Amino acid sequence: MSHLPRRKLILHQHQRAPRAVVLVSDTFSDTDETLLSEHAIAPLNNIAAAWSEVSSTNVAAIRSSTARMGSYIANSYTQSVISTATPNVHITAKLYHYNHSAIQNSLIGRVSDESHYWQVKLVTTQIKLIERNGSITERAAAAASLSDAFYDTELTLDGNSIRGKVNGISVSYESALFNAVTQHGFELTIGSNSWALALAQVDSFLMETVP
Amino acid sequence: MKARILTPWSGSGKEDDPFRPRLADDHKLVRWKDVTAQPAANLQPDPNLFVVEVEATAEALAAIESDSQYLILWSE
Image (tube, rainbow over all chains, first blue to last red; front, side, top):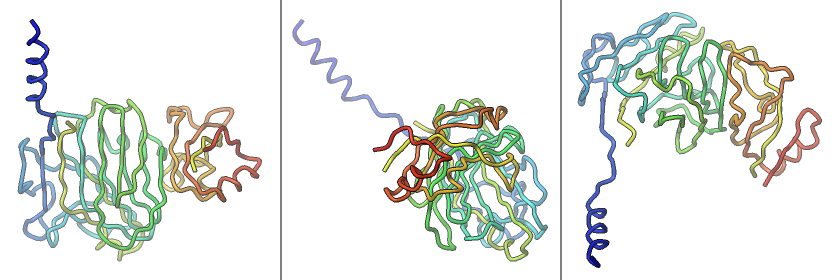
């Protein structure tokens, strides 16, 4: 009888912590001008998924091994998503940041349509966590000093916890809104400046489960 | 420093004018987040008030404290 607690302890020591599973990893290596909707996700696609556009006034296309806005159309946007089987994901990607409101790149999660989703966005000198629920509501923000460059950007959707992080600076919010929706991706937006076209870009998109 | 502060909402919920705390327009904050979680469908509420948790410098908090539009509930 006295040995039973010891055996239980040994069993606990052999239990493994849950690990994240990579759903997709896309480095956007493809022929220039390939539409993102026709691009094969690589190097990892563990859910046989493809990119699709939720809604857009522009298109996303491959250029120089990044996903970019396809052409210059003033004040246009494109939302590209991947359907998964889970609303709980951790997304990382390199988003280009430019210190001007004419260029706004973001990660979007739990996207049910073009105006309902969570978003972590780089806007001039701020990182914003935004609820798009018909209207647009900023739920959290943090000041950031960013140069014109690619930044590792994260969006984590874990139950009611919504978290964003850019360059080590985090924002967070608690909400059950959209928590059964399983499409996630990114959004590119350009304003009325044609030079913004070259800066609306995302690279190294990785989406994994939340353990 | 951290604080919880009562602020009105600002904005119309549009792309170029999102709903946001007026406090963030008027004062320099390191970070803020909505801790009231008022549903977007009810914005702006009447009375137009909600609570944000902020991180800010001592100087910024002193400026907020002297601004009659805002009420600091606690700070540490």
